[in-house]
Length: 259
Image (cartoon, rainbow, N blue to C red):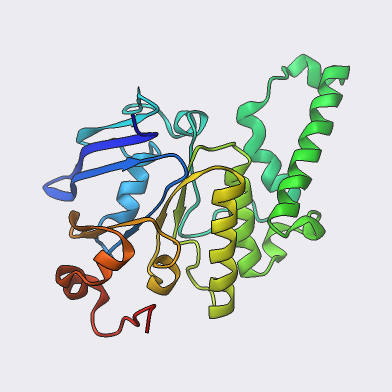
């Protein structure tokens, strides 16, 4: 049994089929990229895989558990967490507090413990602070823990969003265009970070991305969508050489990563 099994997933908006018969099996530790032109249905797939949209047909199973009909926070509780194409941080809160907010789903303390500041509550807070700082250290943000999120450079805001997602202890991490808006040097740093996160946290990662020179070296498999349909799937080399992919998306402007 695969970690995540997605079968025959489709969704209709009125008379429009936004995603048609999407299938995906994700194994533990695997990194899969989903690519395609604007409007191909990539983010719609992510919205179904995280409970934001309920598919019209099809199934989503996480470790054998049927996820259809669950709410987004229940997807997170079952190990599926995401970042967003447009950064969604609590801009007026500190870096550390942004990460802490993601830990509420694991909080075992009740209201009375919080009011009375019981020994167990104090210990839980101490452990939470240690976990937050350890996570920020690993993502290169420890020295900015007290900064307001809105004052971080753009690349660090992306890192913070990933840190917040990791705080939920995911088994499958969905990254929606993690390098959107970044310059070349930042792309290289993010590629190293994604590879390191995958290894250190023993994660499976599904990633939407437009930067092919970012995706090709790090993805195990690539799925290509066009108008909601899967038109190709395979290794980076296989997808890169597929005429349908070249016609639909890569085109003449794509620079071969092996060139």
